[in-house]
Amino acid sequence: MDWGIRNRLSRIFQPQDGRTLMLAVDHGYFLGPTTRLEDPRKTITPLLPYADAIMLTRGILQTCVDPTATVPVVLRVSGGATIVGRDLANETITTSVRDAVRLNASAVALSIFVGSDYEHQTLANLARLIDEATPYGIPVLAVTAVGKELEKRDARYLALACRVAAELGAHFVKTYYCEDFEKVVGGCPVPIVIAGGPKLESDMDVLRLAYDALQGGAAGLDMGRNIWQHDHPVAMIRAIRAIVHEGATPRQAYELLQDLTQASASVGRV
Ligand code: 5RP
Image 1: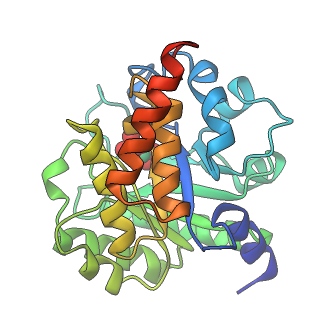
Image 2: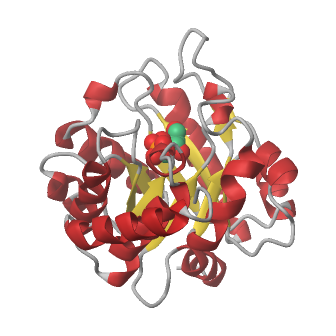
Image 3: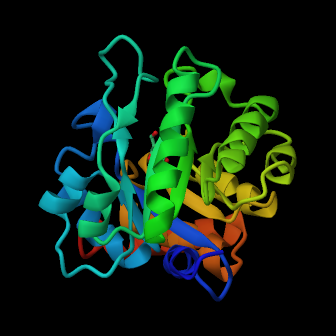
C-alpha cells in the first residue's frame, strides 16, 4: 500500500494495537441541529482529547474545531439529502479531494446505500472518490448507510455492502454491529469500524456493543450519539476507550463510567 495512505491510516488506527476510537459528529449534514449537537463546538471540544480521530463535515470543522487541534480528521464528503427530503440515499460528492487536502484530512468518508434506488449512484460516487483521493495518498472510508431502514442491519445485508465497498477499493469501511458479525468481518478484506446507531437503552448496552464488535473482529468504533447524547459524555467516551485500547471488559468499563460520573458530581458535568 502507498506510503501516504499507510501514514494517514496510522494516524487513525493507533499503531500500538491497530485499533481506533473515532468520534462521529457529522450527523448535522442530514439531520440538522440534532439533540446535543446543536452547538457542535460545545459538544466536541471536551471529547477531543479522548478521540483517535474525528468524523465531520468541512463546515463544522472550519467553524467549530480549533485549527491547532492535532486530532486526525475524517472528512465527510458525501451528502445532498436530508431527513425531510424525498430520499436520504440520493447523495452526491459534496466536497472535493482538493478541499480535503486543504483541510489536512487524514481520510475522506462517503456513504453508499446498497439495495436502495440510489445504489448505482452512490457506488459510482465511491469509485470516483477512490480514484480521486488515492493519488494524493488519502484513504477512503465507505459508510454502509441504511437511511431510515434500520431493520436492514443484518449480517447478510451488511456483509454484502461491506464487501462491495472493499471491492471498489475503500481503505476501511464503517458499518453496524449485528448478530453473526463474524460473517461481515470474514468477507471484508479491509478494516471495519462500527457505528453506534441511535441511543441505546442502557449504558451497559453501549459498552457491550463496543466490546462485542471488537471481539467479533472490528478494528474500532466510529461512534456518535451513544457518546454525546449521554448525560456524561466525557465519562462515556473514556469508558469506551478503556474497552478499545486497554482491554477492559464491559463490566470494568461500566465501573469506570460510574467512578468518573460520581467523581464529576462535585465538579460539574463531564
Ligand atoms: C451517518 C454517519 C454517522 O456518523 C454514524 O451513524 C455514526 O454515528 P452514530 O454512532 O450516532 O450512529 O455516518 O451516516
